[in-house]
Length: 156
Image 1 (cartoon, one colour):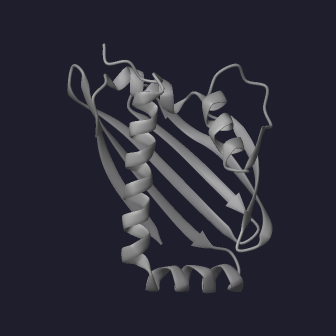
Image 2: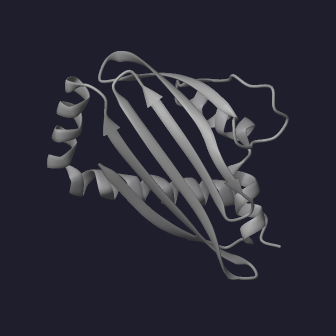
């Protein structure tokens, strides 16, 4: 199952990409939502091999997710690989320069099942694909707005 969306941001591509790689800010946001996120590597910067373990609740059960950075092409592309008990996923994030102070953020998420229960979960998600697409686009928009408001990206 694949989700994708884009959002235009009033900031230079380098600033948007730097905000994407600010793992400490992501950790703070996740903690506010009740999600535990631990860095499991000792790299000083985000790059290939950077990894996190993420603990969260979904549908009333505790879940674990391992997230690994697989590709970084600053300031244009960031790719992640995710793995949990039943699902694997790939996230591709691209930043395109539209103008000196305007960028487009493209996010694509693809999930694949590893077992029967994950296959059933994805099948039920397919029935609600339209609603999930709208939520995905809305959350990407909210995140971009929050990133701009918090001063994480500066427009020049």
